[in-house]
Image 1 (tube, rainbow, N blue to C red):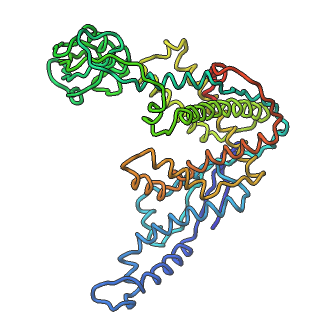
Image 2 (cartoon, helix red, strand yellow; image 1 turned 90 degrees about the vertical axis):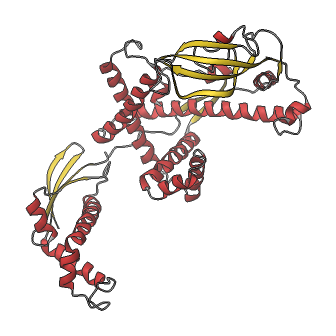
Image 3 (tube, rainbow, N blue to C red; image 1 turned 30 degrees about the horizontal axis):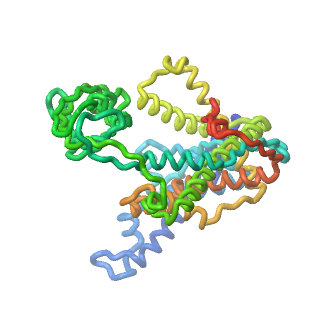
Length: 450
C-alpha cells in the first residue's frame, strides 16, 4: 500500500492511497480457495470446483467485499501509523469510471482512491482542580410535602352526579362527533369522554361552550384547531362538534386519610407522605445537579480554546437547528416573534454547537486521562431503560441497538459524561447554598447551551 498526503489544512487531511493489483488478486485467490471447500455447485463434487470457475461466478462480488474491507482496514492502519485520531469516520472517493472500476474488480488494475478526514485536535487541558462551585440546595419542608399531597388529592378527587347546569370545574361525560366542512374526520369521535371544564385539556373554546349544559342536552360547538396542533391535517382548521351530554358531575373534596393512601397502593398516610417527600428530594436533587453541572461546564469552557473539527460542529449545529425549526413550527412562532432574525438565531446556535463540541472533547480527554470506564452492565441498564420507553416494541428496539454500534454508543456516551462530571466534582471546591424552591427551579436564559 502506498500513501501520499495531498492536503494538510488545519484539522483537515486528504490522502491518496494505492493498493497494488497484485495485493487485490492475492486476497481474492485466498478468498476463493476458502470458498472452494464450502460452495456447492451442480456438476461438481464438494471441494472440487475449480478456482477459475469460482472466479468467473463470484470474482467481482467477492472483490467488492475485499475492497470494502481494505478501505476500513487501511484507514485504521494509516491513522495508527500517523498517530492521528479521526474526528468522524473518514470518507472515501473511489473511481467512478465504469471501465476502471471493472478492471479493479477483475484484479487487472491497482486500487487508487482518496481518503479524507478531520483529526481530533491536540490541546493542553486547563487546570480543572479546585473549580469553585456553588451548589444550590433546597430543604424539603413539611409545608411542601403537604402542598404536594393537596395537589394529589385535587387531581384524584371524586365526582358526584348532579342535577342542573354545568359550572366551572364540573366534569361532563359526553359523546361527540367532530366535523370539518360538514364531514367527520378521523379521530374526531368518542362515546364516553370526560371533560373537566376549565382544565384546558381540550381545544381552546371547547370546554367553555359546555358551561350551563345539562344531562341529556345536545349542543353543536364551533372551534378552531390551533395553528401548532399536533395533527398537521387539522392545524388551523375550523371545526364543529356534535355533543351529547350524558352526565354532569361536580367535584368533591377527597378525604386525606389512610384510605386515601391505600387508593395508591400505599399502606398508610405516613408512608404516602414519605413517598411524596422522596419525589421532591429526587426532583430538587436533579435540578441541583443540573445547576452544578452548568457551572462546571462554564468553567471548563472558559479554560479551553482550540480549533474544532468543522464537520463535527456542522453536524451538531444541524441537530440543534433541526430541533429549533420543529419547535417553532409546533408553536406557530416566528423569528420576529422572538425579536430576532433567522441569521442572528443561526449565529447564536452555531456558538452553542461549538461549545458542545469543545466541551465534549474536553470531557473526553479528561475522562481518558483519568481512566474513567463505562461497564457493560451500565450500558445494559441504559438499554433496558430505553426499551421500556417503547411498550409493545421491546424486541424491535433491542434488535436495533444490538445491530447498530453507533446507537449503542449513544447510550454509553451520556453515562461516560456523567461519570467524568462526578470525577471533576470530587476535585472541585464546592460550597452549598440554601435557596428557595423557585430559585432552584428557575431556568437560566441560556440553559439550552449547557
